[in-house]
Length: 424
Image (cartoon, rainbow, N blue to C red; front, side, top):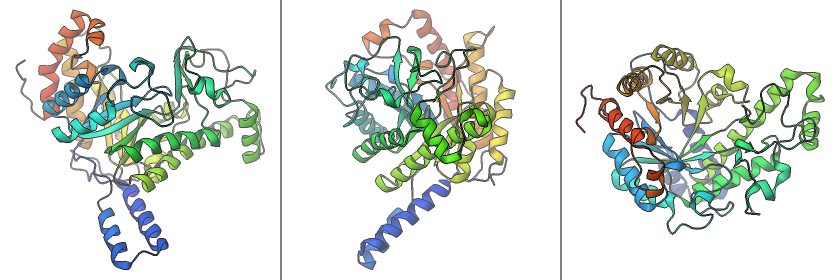
């Protein structure tokens, strides 16, 4: 059991690394390789995924870059600020910000090869600056917006049967939020594993970071008060009936538990894929910091930790209140696991606070996360740094840029572990 304390907690790779090494060993024995080579393979695998200790991480969204210069500046800024882990988004809604063999290029990049590969460039720059680069993927979302994609190869057009349908037979409506894939279908889980296997097989990432590894069923995805329930397509209902002998109306808790189990099974499948494809890569996930709320989205992050399915877990601990921030961390430290916990924090709304006061709250939360776990992850890059891309800069008001400039001398010393402000 993790002990509560002051950041001196053992930051191992949990049960996952040991299980992966055992799997590698078993496969080697089965292959009939010479004993000496088997021993070398086993020794080579002993290190497992290398997770920075402590972890000073930052999320970089797909909205933060458009060009190679952007990527170069992002990695340099993160490294110079003292971050040792960059969680770099490369999949948002069924399109890719890297050269995927299975999904089309992101519309935001023109829907075609942009003349550089953002993930390749980010990895190269991360190596140069001695920081880890984890590829961040949104798992369930497969489109976003009020209009369908124009590309016939995009999942929304290509595989309509893989999306959510309600109890009235209606497909999930397009909106300002995501429409999502149905993880209760084995073929959907197989497809997602194949997408991520293609990524980790061809790109030497330090890790794969899963976001939206849940049902994104909050409004407007499920309109408030509508009574709509997903997924209720005939195939999902048949699979549920086969597994339980029930219909959703027979036992609401059993129906919720089964949906939660389908998401957990997807995590297991991705973990197994990482083990066979790139066992040195860490697998992580962003999870809701309040477990009861997360279960409304059929996400059981506590179970993933206790099963050792992840190499570290990031709590989306988004609150303006430092006391609440700590209260949400405490229960996770009692889990029977050695999987490192990384509290995630954001800049929030901070009503009635000046920019400087709000930044001080963020700095305090970084220090609290450090004291409890040794680790932290900041959301997000664009809260601290300006973009170099003219298109993105044009969307930023002078007031937004001024706020970033005011935050940096307050927040960055906390990132670096110093209590002193830095000069701009």
